[in-house]
Image (cartoon, rainbow, N blue to C red; front, side, top):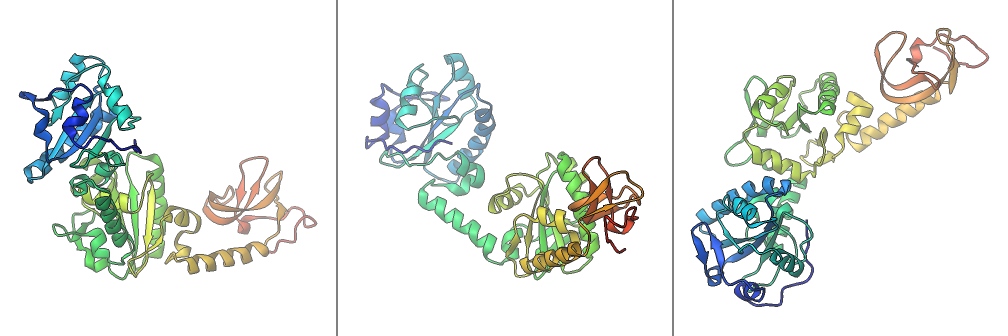
Length: 390
């Protein structure tokens, strides 16, 4: 997103536009004088009908605009077209409830240079005196919606502070509930109040059924959840599924709780608060309500239930125990069942080629072919090569 650095020198929005040759603005009903913007919060919307991100963002902006206007906010958006001709401009503008600068082939170039816009969509806020604010609003609105108004730096910092307080404040109810919903749901529709989770270790699981890596990790996470089998441990699914049917299919495979799918804002807020950029993701929260790890996926994949309650000290204990186990094993062995020498490796997970059971941590693996053995499944073929005691 664009981040304009230079500020417009004009002291009035009408002066800015008139200096570029704009004599009037357009609305759905016809021409509007430039003076109609006086005293309002003005945002310049650079967009085009051919731009996919623009077509995706515009409906969200329409919803925000109508919500703020209906709430009595003095806001006006002015559309500046990057369309290729007047027909495409009119087609694009007809879905917008705000104003527009009349289409003129080179005007968007002059205004984009004035406000240092280097990509579209771009939404540039201006203060009441016509001085450009530094940051493009696209990301802010995608993150916070109408809560971002009046789109100032001060409001941006306030919102970030609120997120930080929810993330680090140790108040699970503030993180997972709000005035309109104080519960989570299970796959059978049972509601569990968020306050019942206070004092537990919580895993916030971000995933979607359409994602093969998520489906794979769900299986691993379920194994850990079942192995821990403790009333002091709970997982809360935060869905990024595409629709309700997909969400219900996904939750049907899970023995834990979930944020209701209809609470879209809560799910988006949690993704933003913990900066979840890819799925699957797992944030581990300690009994005090504060994050233990934002990379719980790696913790679970490497150590599984053995690391519960997933604190740094516990993981340190597990790693020390694993090192001790590894030191008691030889670096390599020659097994009677395999033609090549096997080397001791640390593995997050594997299937033993002899007993066909899953394994974790230490394995004897072949560098030549895809072959792994549990340490307990090794049968020594050459005692001189190894002093392994099983």
